[in-house]
Image (tube, rainbow, N blue to C red):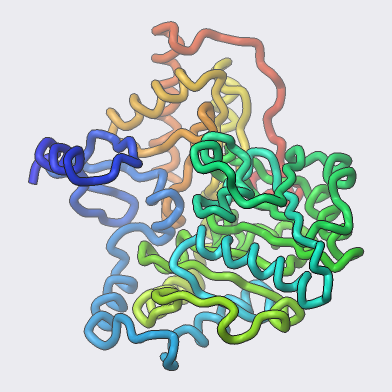
Length: 425
């Protein structure tokens, strides 16, 4: 089918929730995607952080084929060999104790909120129902996860959302202390905000959140749906900090494109959850879990974490140099292979994204003004250099056309934790 015929069919039959780019993709290989005409695109978005091992990875493809021929689904009323094996791996890597498998990141976060409430009620603290979340946070689109998502455009059309959520200024320790009280059942944090503009939280803020929750028995919930599983150069982003959370949620890269999310919890938290209290039809199925096990195996065999640190550090240095060359660049942020380039306006960011796509390079724009880079973790230094060179040319072109008029530099680059893999410790 052609792009025009697919667009026409979607306009008539598909619910209009996506503003798609005018490209019809047909297949992928490595870090590249291909359209209907066979044109090749260098993908620095990886399905919004999903395709960590790129496209058509031979080991992943082999497992999908083999497992699909054995057992795709039964139900969670029976045992299969894969969920327990995957839970064992994830708990080993994270230092937490138990796992629950869901279908998506949003579902995992929704489950984490439920767990925070049930932990409080199991202690007889029935009035402890409040959540603290951060400004510019994004946790998903179900009613609970949306309630903990800061940006109003996600919540307003569906109001009233779940009550009991208070937002704290991002990385503001004093505001966190001021708003925390005995009614809080959990503090909700993305160690690196993704949709909010690629903002790593500071060690001081995360440590303060941990200290406050430990004093009252509230939970520290970390959303690593986008920043977890190797994206920052460690298996979990919280491992850049001296903090152990009570609950961590995962999803995007876990099953290499198949729907799978996870909630990891400590043994103490797990004690409040009993059979029948929570569940899912498709989560933790044999196909998705078998693939996820292979993803983690490839991570170890191909030394993905070391590769991310090396290539991510190189990428970040190049982006910093780029920032010094273009006045429209206000900030460069990130960890590992999760990077953001903040530009002075949404119009410039839109123009740059469009121009990069015309050059057959896929990036995206988040929080209006931030160019976000989430390449497959197998990306090479040479591919990173190709993208930065193209960005340099595009930014120069935008500036010369008047779309990116020079402004005074704000001097706000490198707002990174001291433990950042990108040029720090």
